[in-house]
Image 1 (spheres, one colour):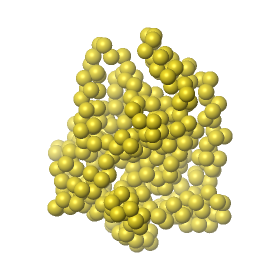
Image 2 (cartoon, helix red, strand yellow):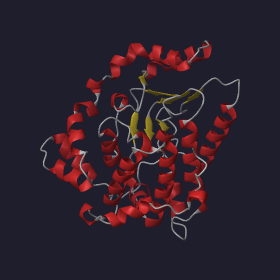
Image 3 (cartoon, helix red, strand yellow):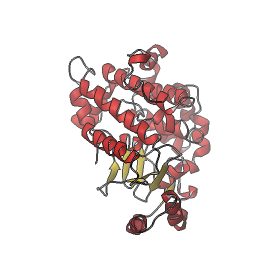
Length: 340
């Protein structure tokens, strides 16, 4: 469902670079040709194939993919013109990276079809593409919950978590497009907000599962580490708490711990620093092999029975987590050293 390939990343980057300095372009509007998805993330089958090259995780194609994807994320975040993304359908992982632009340029539209997630822990990865930045800045512990569980949310949840800006029903999208091509605006985002205002009641907080369980999420997911979070959830008889616990038992124990460390570091880092950190982390993920096992279980063999290493949370040590945050490059040679 519109999974990102290296070719797509290069095409998007090229056109954004071309439009950035063009006097004929006032804003960028990005959407999907598919009704099912905006973008369901990176091409994980490609990750599996090239990640199993020898030596494992050392493929130049993998290096190119993540270096150029993260550079694109940075370009979008600091785009000098309004950047509007229509997140109709599934938007996950890499799709979030090309949707979550910086606050000075972005407008993120969701619909009743929006299904949003950062589900990387489900395949032995972590919420990358700047997830360390935008998830760590979600209200309270919502970003931690989304990063550690990988759960999918709807439009009302996305608005409540500040991962979207306006709601427009899909039935109104043709009218929106007619509006955008038929008039000139000082700021196209203001015109879209005005257009969306009558529909705001269709995606209010009372329709959000995150809002309904906000107190529980903040209480449990503020734990000192993943073990503390799961222990706290285990003591809560609430059905939502038990659902969270059951989901986390299926995720990679190691990558949940790595993700929590990523989010807590990312809370005080710049976008560029987060993306450099994530480039370091993703290299370690493929060398360790956890992501290859996750993709095998989910996509290749489809047995949904990944053999995580280590197999349990109790076996994860700080010494296992620490290497993910050690760069493979000196500062002057880092592939993303030019980001600022």
